Amino acid sequence: MTQSQPHLDSQSNTTNDSTSVADRVGLFQDATRAQASQIDFMNAMIILLLGIGLFLAASSVILTVAESSGSAEEYVAQRSAERVADDVLLNSTGDSFPDAECTAKFFTQDETYDCPSLTLQNTSDPDSEYLRHMLGVSTHSNRYTINVTLEQKGRVWTQSLDGSSDTANTYALGPSRPEKGGVTTFTRHVTYDSNGDGDREYFTVVIRVWS
Image (cartoon, rainbow, N blue to C red):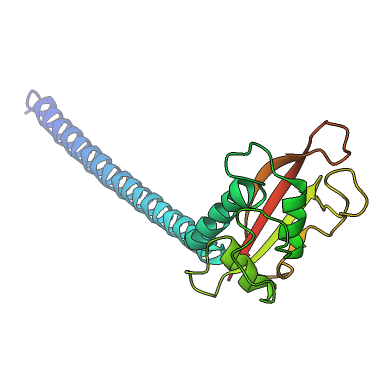
């Protein structure tokens, strides 16, 4: 009896140790599952936030496009600027520089001067009709409103373009740009000898289109 007692104690200790390890394994597995669930939740939240961010970004782009003047107005503005700088303001086809008198006649709707493009339109028409015809956009919808100015340093030019005092005009045609709403602007640089001294200065033809 005395010799068997230690053997029973050893078995009891072994059983207790085995139970302790199993409990630890179970706790570790539970913790691992909880951590995995947290990671899955975080990943799901990240994906959701990314999706919301992409949606908001796309919505912003759509709103920007909707509020801008749109591709049709951009096309009209660009072609109008090319028409003015490369044709309407020239004395003859092939000229490298715009002509001061042709420019004045265009902005005053005066067809008495023999410029290639200035014999096409009745000057009694309103500014908008005159501009649409002169700029080659009369075949488009009449919903386009066009404004053309000749500017230097951001201001509409009101003086002579050839150094003479009798050809001063306000170089602007068309209605004023609206205070609200999208306006598409396109510019072209041209030069004139505005002082009559042989030195040409840079000016900017500004085309504004809205609908």
